[in-house]
Length: 187
Image (cartoon, rainbow, N blue to C red; front, side, top):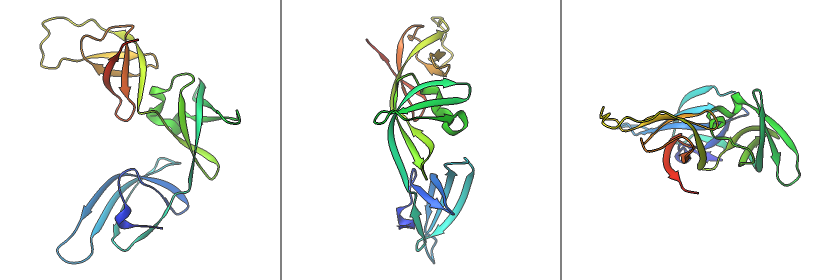
């Protein structure tokens, strides 16, 4: 069992038989009385948001989640297919289940698939991914609007802002947690 003092962003807990992840967390200690823990949580199956306030003596059940290392194979329509690297078992997750993670999936990428009650519910990507720039507008020298970035599109169709020296055909590193440019990759 977890107590309210264990609450933090990213914690996975079980409420009414469903797994939730804490997406935002605030602690307040009023002058009198118990400390209050206000949490924003997301249901890991349905995606519904929930806001709850807990007192310091409240207890929680940790979500029983299993993780398995899998390899991304391909996408077909709104389904994304993965293979267990140990027993070659395959499964499919929908675009809705994966959310923004679909922007960074490339063939043969190793990911961690999260299971709840033997059902896949989410994936964890590597922190950084290297993707090729497929479209980059030329940057005009002297364009000093105060913002030295330009939009580019990478091989998965994801668009992001990068420094002006990045060109079409370059490989760039992207932080999958924020979706932002990190550096240009030399091969």
